[in-house]
Length: 241
Ligand code: URA
Image 1 (cartoon, rainbow, N blue to C red):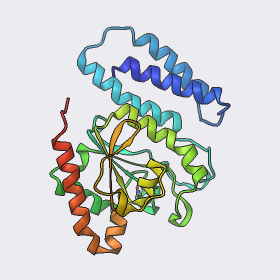
Image 2 (cartoon, rainbow, N blue to C red):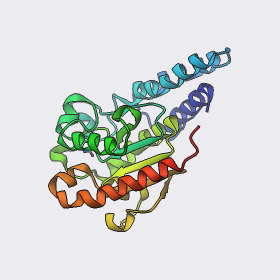
Image 3 (cartoon, rainbow, N blue to C red):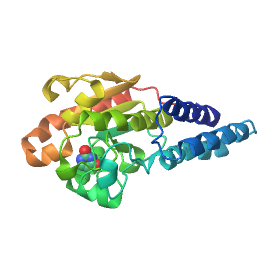
């Protein structure tokens, strides 16, 4: 997808939300106008370096559009909106559930104890944290780290879907049962979802344990290592562009 397509998609996304009566997206009209003017800029010739700078811009543009979100009550209790972090051109995306206390303070996903373990899990399959993109289903912390509510997921998931459209990862790794079953709209157990390649909006999806669960139950690190090797094998089997 070139930068023109990405901007066009963002313009369509914002205008669809507005047509659906969704007036709570901050800067909706402003973002739409920005997109329209960027569309005009998009007709100007760009070299490849400018092209990649422009597509990085698109995650930034999405961030600008959504980071003040107040579409659910979590927007009123958060300290920081935790958009996501990492390589905007990543082939692998890790998706957790929702920010915890450390993430809410710093505005960065997976920076607490579970995050440090996630970094080790990524390094165990010979990647670096900065190679991948890390995000969550919810961008704001639920009070006392309770499970996300369906209405919160419904309001927040479009941001994740848009991030995936922009980043275009080859594989997604869902961290934990809640992340996996939420993305797949499934009630299945983590055990039955592990070890398979699922589909999430046209992207391969693999599910493993949440690092926080591994901290609580270190016995699960053995099956989690099997999942990580499975992820690495799927990644190695990809035709990367
Ligand atoms: N747990 C999650 O699911 N996400 C984070 O960002 C941190 C902890």
